[in-house]
Length: 125
Image 1 (cartoon, helix red, strand yellow):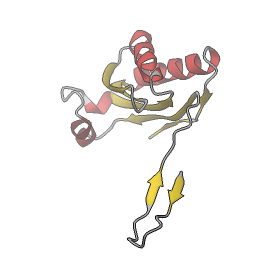
Image 2 (cartoon, rainbow, N blue to C red):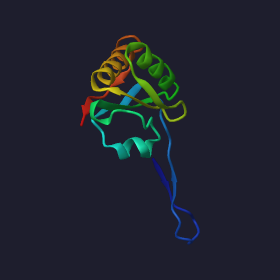
Image 3 (cartoon, rainbow, N blue to C red):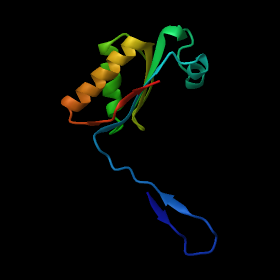
C-alpha cells in the first residue's frame, strides 16, 4: 500500500493499493455447524440441515483459480457451491462437515502439489 499526501491543504489522504499476484491461498476455513443467520446473510441455500452442515471458505490468487477450485470441490465430494468470485478469488461452498473437509483438502493438495501454490493453514471453528 502506498500513501500519497496531496500538495494542497485540503486535508485529504489518497491511498493506492496494489495487488502483487502470486500463487497462493490466503484463507482456508471451515465453519462447522454454522448458525442459520450466517446462511441467510451469505445468501446460501436455506433448505440445509444446519446441525450437520459446514461452510468452506477459500481466498486465493490469482483470482481466476477460484473457478478451478470450485470445480475440484464439486468433483471431490458432495458439496453445493454457494459463491465463486473470479475477480476477488473467493470460493464458498456448503455440505456436511466431512464433505467440506474433503473438498478443501483436495483443493489445497492440488494447488500445492500440481500448481506450486503457497498454502496457508486450514482453520476450523
